[in-house]
Length: 206
Length: 206
DNA sequence: TTAGCCTCTTTCCAACGTCAAGATTGCGGG
DNA sequence: CCCGCAATCTTGACGTTGGAAAGAGGCTAA
Image (cartoon, rainbow over all chains, first blue to last red):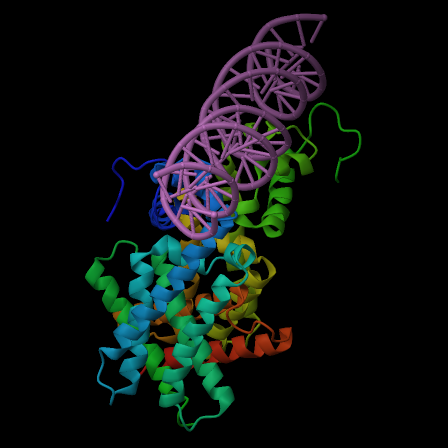
């Protein structure tokens, strides 16, 4: 439904076009290389046009972050549901697989979502997304660690999130598995998630 | 030895001055807010002066990253040595404490060191630093898991690094312990490190 | 002393984000 | 049907940025 051809003075759906080109641009040029003018250029629109849809560049980035979190949680739930329900540890691993899959597919956006800048940039966009992510994790852990104390559940949540976030972050930065094949890398990731799930399950019986 | 007063045409030690002001600036303004001109301004020097000491802005950032990694590994060894040698798990926790302490004291620099941009920016500065960090971790694990297979040791290293990196990253971003006291946060961090160490120790006996 | 090199300044350029003002369009009320 | 208005987009401008080029100043070794 791209009306790229022979559009008149009005674009038709500039907002979406900017989000789309912005997303590509972030992955191509990195966070520091992102440019509002280039974004407008790719949407075939003047450099000042975005201002009518986003108050500032940070406002556009905030929208990207918002959608990123929505996709991230979607990827996690999808992957977790793919697993038999009678194996609780596997659901936890599934969450991690979904988490890492999204990050691997959108490395720069992922970094932006968890960037220190983000906190200053949008203040809210990230918080909402992170909150729903936290709920998702807590729901699985509440199920798995039904009999544990609240403190233990929190520690388990900290630990689970830290492991999957840390692993994929280090992979994206090239610190882990720099020259591994994709398959070997996935295996290392699954091993880390398995160790994480084992550790979390231990919180069930002190 | 600051010769800030009545310096002549020549600065005397501009390179170090730029590194110093650059480091402060990064923490103050964030990665995106960092500016070479502001850096020069704080060193009381014209905006083109830095070019004679750093080929580009990325070159200065690379130097910051290089020094950051040196400090990070130093912080880890210091903290690990503070521990009785007969308690191997404690040394592992010590490494994590040193890791997190550095990150907490230099949050933006830490983010820069492990930023996707960094990879593109310096290509080498980060790799060397990360390599020595990896060696540090491997040395402790080789000791602790002397009888484990190479694959197990690698998995243990992945897991240990991922846990400490992920936890402190999420803390710095505000995702973990957003409104906890500093003391409570440290407790949560130690809990995560303890759980990590316990799991790593399990790699010793399959 | 003086020649030469290193350091720093000045000036310039293209590109950036943002603002203000004008041009163009689509839409709803007469 | 059309007319005016608001939303959308363009043009042009301002201040700032990173970087290149060229000149001025000062240190040092011969």
